[in-house]
Structures are given as C-alpha cells and as structure tokens.
Image (tube, rainbow, N blue to C red; front, side):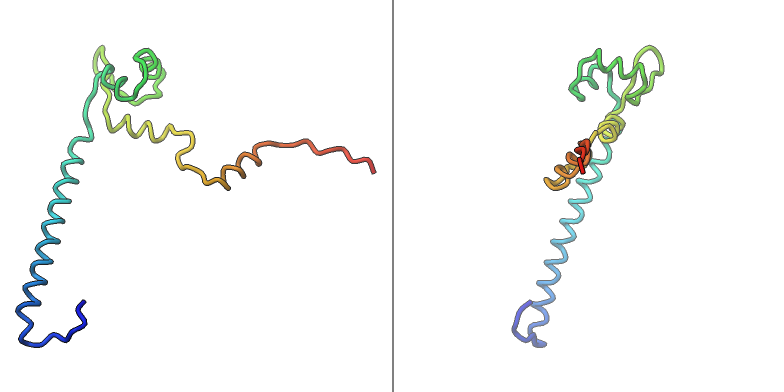
Length: 124
C-alpha cells in the first residue's frame, strides 16, 4: 500500500491499477487451471509388460513373477497382461518400506530401541 492519501481525483488511476492487477491474477489462475487439467488427463495410461518393466526399471522375468503371485496390480483380458501407469505409481508408493524420511534423532532412537541388550548380572 502507498503511504500517501488517496484523493477523489486519484480514484480513476487507482481503479485502473486494481483492474490491471485483477486481470493479471485472472490470467495466472486460468493458466494454472489449464496446466493442472492437462496433467490430470494422462493418468490412466495402459501399458504392455515391456513398457511396464522399462517404467519400473526391473527385468521382465521379475515383473512376470510379481504378476503371477498378484503383488502387482494388473488385468489379463486374454493371453497378455495389461498394466496401468497410475496403478503402478500407487503400488510403488504403498510398497515403500519407509515412506517418510526420519530425522537424525528419530533414526538414532529407532536404531537404539531395536537393539535389545542383555542386562549384566549383578553380584550383590
């Protein structure tokens, strides 16, 4: 805000500045909305086993083994498996061993609590 007093004669200039700022914000919001809608459209993309193995970065044999025991979500409408990218992303997120990185204090506390020490015998 400006420190000077706004007079009646300054009103057209101030209203024009406010209009320009509102129009700028409106254009930014429409651009952001367009970008977020473009990202949301491409989430459910079907993939073959070769594409899924490349996407996950694992060998095809390992992928087939995980598909056979049902640990990776997929459909098999005929002879071939059909996997979806968004389902693979969800599977990757849920199969993490430690989803949130621990701080140094939390890490040292978890390590010390996991190591049980046998108490020393006391000779009274």
